[in-house]
Length: 115
Image 1: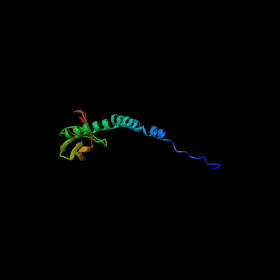
Image 2 (image 1 turned 180 degrees about the vertical axis):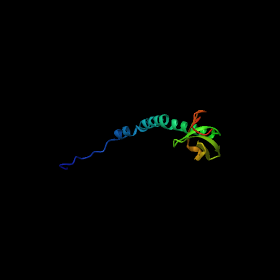
Image 3 (image 1 turned 45 degrees about the vertical axis):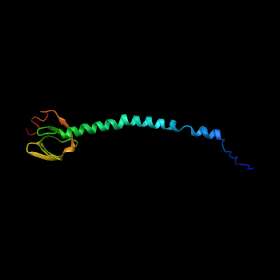
Image 4 (image 1 turned 30 degrees about the vertical axis):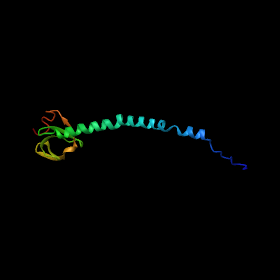
């Protein structure tokens, strides 16, 4: 009928049933991808958050700590949200409790910060 356009013929019922059959098979790669993301990204991040929360809750007077900003000092006083940290003789700064990155071993600051 037309010179340049091929006519399109509808596919029969057998071909349509074959195309519809791959529902679950299409979800398997997505599920595998989610499992990989869970074990490589989500789970380690949740573990790290839990460890940091335990660290922040365990802080006490006299602990030597490092903040995320790199400030090193000894805790002189603390409340629910903030800590007073002595970074040198007579110099006390107030730092948000959540900004403590890690706890240093006792005696690390001996001679460098007020004791």
